[in-house]
Amino acid sequence: MNIYHAIFRSSLGKKFIMGLSGLALVGFVVGHMVGNLQIFLGQEKINAYGAFLKSMPKLLWAARIGLLACVGLHIWSAIALVRENRRARPVAYQVTRSTASFASRTMIWSGLIVLSFIVYHLFDFTITPEFKGVDESGRHDIYKMVILSFSHPLSAGFYILANTLLAIHLSHGFQSLFQSLGLSTGRFRHWFQSLALVLGWLIFVGNVSIPTAVLLGFGKEVL
Amino acid sequence: MNLTLKVWRQKNADEPGQFVSYQAKGISQDMSFLEMLDVVNESLMTEGQEPIAFDSDCREGICGTCSVVINGAPHGEQKATTACQLHMRHFNDGETITIEPWRAKPFPVIRDLRVDRSAFDRIIQSGGFISASTGGAPDANAIPIPKPDADTAMDAAQCIGCGACVAACKNASAMLFVSAKVSHLGVLPQGKVEKDRRVLAMVNQMDKEGFGNCTVTGSCEAACPKEISLDFISRMNRDYAAAVVKSAWNQS
Image (tube, rainbow over all chains, first blue to last red):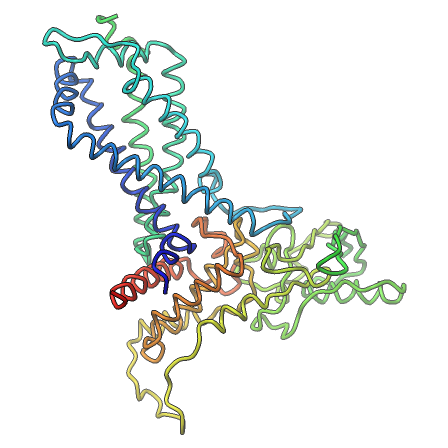
């Protein structure tokens, strides 16, 4: 057995990579959401949280590089698998009667749109933020930056759209990954299915609550 | 009952095919789907036309030879039923039925509704042998097997290798078939000896044949006339991962 082939070339190996990288990314998404929700605790809390993250650059960069690697592996395996899938059915059916869920049939599209959002989101808030203001303690004023950004309906709208697609993506992906990792047998399958649905929409509610609150007037005092 | 059939006609793998409409007249509700096709073929032959080629053998739902997609569903919409056991009472008088072959690159059309499924045979062959003693038949229950293991093995061994899972999957993946074959030997003491080698070889052959990958949509399980569970795919993924790790460990 060739180990490189078994992991990076075989169908099951690629699904394994997709599942593991997906699991790591879900972990990040949950942490990111919990961190962001601190905005509701006020300007002081969220800015202190930002400063806290920036205070350990080594750990921050290790996390960033790790995430980037996971994103890379996730996308690479997705494209490789989809290409093989398309090749496997060169002649389409005249009548299609799919029992597959909408989420499972559109993983590549929900994934690609979420990816385009992540690129936009990184440039908007991290790489080239328009707003570079500081608060009274001289820390980057994340509170004001977020509220400024989400006051634009277009920016808030894209955020909400991307999170809707992410919820749909996770409602299938988070159960599917346990199947790929070989853990989804018997009653566990139903647990993972419910868990994926709950987790996907919980992340949606958590994340979307921020732009929704801003659009409804939360944090108006800093504008 | 009278029906309109839209049937895929294709001379061989190299020539393009197309749908041709036929009238099926005077069909009894008690006929099976394949008997209905027999009636249509008889009238085609009396008219001097080529009959519709389709596969069938036992006609009692156990051989896995029949293989037609009926209105977009492999073996028709009836749950846990092969096309030969599907009866015309499930259709309405005057209905138009679209009949297509299994669609997958590793299953080239031989003619009309018949496809070449020897890719499945090659996957089975790649699995190899089990280390059973030769000689006289062993005593029954000489090797104790826990009841749950025997049940799991029997559930997997229900697979008749018809290929409906491939036909139903949006990716034309053969994972349900391969996982059933890997599991029904892998869970038994007689088949455990070659468990790792078997799963590595069968997955490798499955990939070589050009089947797609599993997206966990569950379409295969829904279409399977023997109701093979998606659990077997999960079990195969686990067995494969364990086999890769063990074999890497042994190599180093």
